[in-house]
Length: 427
Ligand code: ASP
Ligand code: MG
Image 1 (tube, helix red, strand yellow):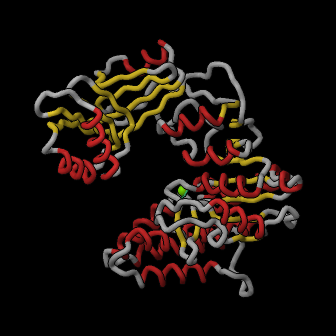
Image 2: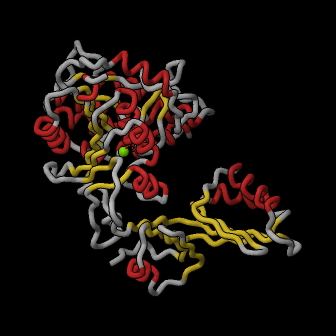
Image 3: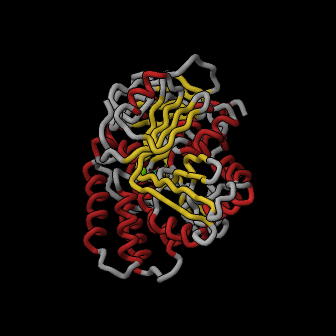
């Protein structure tokens, strides 16, 4: 057990491998920071490749022409490999051209049904291609994670079978790991019958946590294009500050309220085994970053989170009876049925309101299910703001000049819903 404590896990997301220069930078970080112990490197698809694959898949599944975007994807990956001087070697498996041929075959043989299952078989190529290029650039071992990370058959959101995954990983990567890094895919898993699954968009952080948990890693480092874990998204809010250290608990809550820093499933496996998560900037690798671990800290600077495209739905009983537990059970049941996740809720004597992510399709289904029993009003195009660890000044900063449609505060959290401000930047 002790030797395996030396293992470190690095995770590089799409932005950090977006072109040849970015991959050279990754190699530099691995050489200067990777240390001499065993290192497992998790890599996402390059740049916006996953979006491109989603579009390709949609075209192919709908029977439309996809040759141009497929050519672009092929040229892009081959071009980067060439720029890095990591052309295919005949003896190596797989090869880049081999993977690209497999992708082409998959697209050519899609069947009309099974959208989600076939999505996974196609969209997974982003990570397969990226890891092969990165492994070659580092002259590192390429590891296919799909036979190791075992999931059920929930396509596009595979649920991990932890005991099997732990057994598989420990067999494939014993503590006396050969020297030199091993490169594997984020976001992917596989079923017991050997089919590829994906873990949900942006799931590579979660992969890093799965690997660290199962192998008892010493730490996980996520390399990002920001200086660490910040109190707000700098694309939306001015004057952001970095948290030098923060507890697992606080981080989970921020991810839960919609901060897009780290995939929300990442923290729990690390917290369970006490593995610290370091968030560092690949643009400034010597800077301190953030350490997420089991710690106590004083009051943190308020964190600001904005969720756009929100919908506020209110239900009133038709006969002016009170909103009762029985009524709530019906409403919650219908929300779960149509998979609308509640971001905020509030009730009064005769009405009950929920704020959810807007989906025209799901909302329509909800109305159909409940319209008979309740009078339902809804507003779309709203924003939900959350301030964690709020104070008077931070509330003023966000609420001034806005009409609040709903507000709620607990001891640590202030939330409100208001009309959309066209993605305005907040000073
Ligand atoms: N490439 C996948 C995505 O873009 C997984 C990830 O980036 O974490 O969703
Ligand atoms: Mg990505």
